[in-house]
Amino acid sequence: MTVNEFIGKPKIYQHVLSLVYAVKEINDNPEILPNVSLGFQIYNSYLNERMTYQNTLNLLSTRKHTVPNFKCDQQKNMVAVIGGLDSEVSRHMATVLGIYKYPQLHTFLKSIIFNNTAGDTVYFNEKGELAAGFDIINWVTFPNQSFLKVKLGWMDPQALEGKEFSINAEAIKWHNMFNQVMPLAKCNENCHPGFCKKTKDDMDDCVKCSADQFPNKNKDQCLPKGINFLSFSEMLGIILVSLALSFSLITSLVLIIFIKNKNTPIVKANNRDLTYFLLLSLMLCFLCSLLFVGRPQTMTCYFRQTSFGIIFSVAVSCVLAKTITVVLAFMATKPGSRMRKWVGRRLTSSIVLTCALIQASLCAVWLATAPPFPDLDMHSLAEEIIVECNEGSLTMFCCVLGYLGFLATISFTVAFLARKLPDSFNEAKFITFSMLVFCSVWLSFVPSYLSTKGKYVVVVEIFSILASSAGLLGFIFLPKCYIIILRPELNSKEQLIRRK
Image (tube, rainbow, N blue to C red; front, side, top):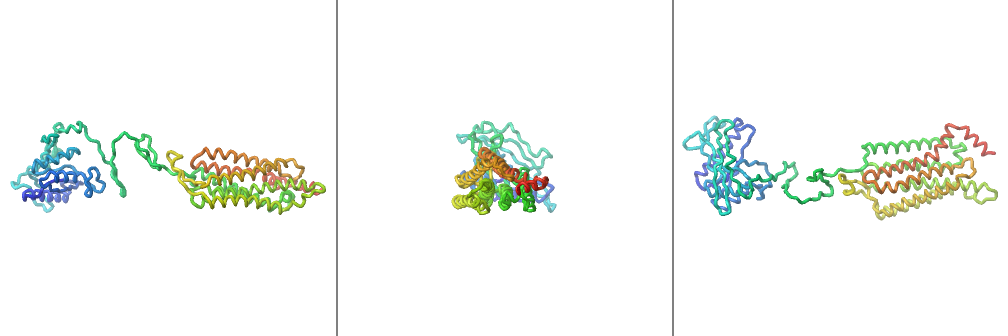
């Protein structure tokens, strides 16, 4: 309950003290109003129109700022307003309170009686009458400064239960400015700690949601966007990680098989050192795909594409070196050929080292000029924010992929031309198939990479890495493992043929 009163007269001051005392006793006695606490605010009108309007607005505002409708910094529920003793003061108050439709109690507390916490009977009128209550008055003001005073009902705390409050709704006279329609509420739900409120404006204009929000289905509220990236905990991430680890384990097993059978003809004929190096690089190719899973961080963005580019360049250069070795070995067997001096470990090492250094140089320039970095893409998806690695320089990214494609094309071409060379251990056929798979995967990668969005861009690249690496591993090494493990007699026959 809120009181607007002037305290200039002793009689009115007694009314104020009576109200304060009554509220205190009611709040202290749980049997009078259980689970309800009363409060009040007292303002002095000074019999002045300006101060009356000012203090009436204070009732509708916060304690710090006189801005009606904003009440986030206090918790109060104003039920009614007791006007001034003077009818003029109450009329000025009604001008403002009528807008918000707060009931205004006109006449003062006539009498009230109750027992306080000490058990004493307390009266609030000089005669000790038991009747107590308020008149509920509707003040209607008009542009010509005239007003209408209508009694709407009665409030009697001493009445029977259910009849303490009575009001005649039909007697309410609303001003024409309201068109006889209840005004729309401007309040939101209660604020959570640390948050403030804004009024709900009724308007027909559309407001665009911020970049990190999206509209709901009814287009009347903005909702926060979710986060989109390939996580280790989601099913798709688990499957890709499992495939990468499984392929790397298979590669390590193949490496162990070749090391244990390093003295067999089929292993010796295909340059053992180069074979070991190719298997190690393939193992790293499978493992580097793990850098693409998880929320992008600064270091992972640095090493994602660069490690992929360098490691794959090493793998493809090893394949190229093996193919060139096959061609040179066949040419060296011809009488009087000068190619014998080129066949050996020095040539293959030079090819692998040179090709890898060129790719490493491109990656170094990329990191030095415009390195990749974690970024948020808020516009590609309607309801999600994509957490991604921005490539920094798209030109350098294309150069790394282009150089890798260049090496793969040369390897495929040389292997295709050498696929029919008459050599017992000629693996050019297998290299041709492996490089065909490799090139096909990465040619299909480009349109897939450009057409997908969000975490599926990363999924496409991981799949391309695993598929191309698995193609090299399967076509080049699985036939040899089949002979070494399941058909060792073929290995011995080949040895006899080679000795002849």
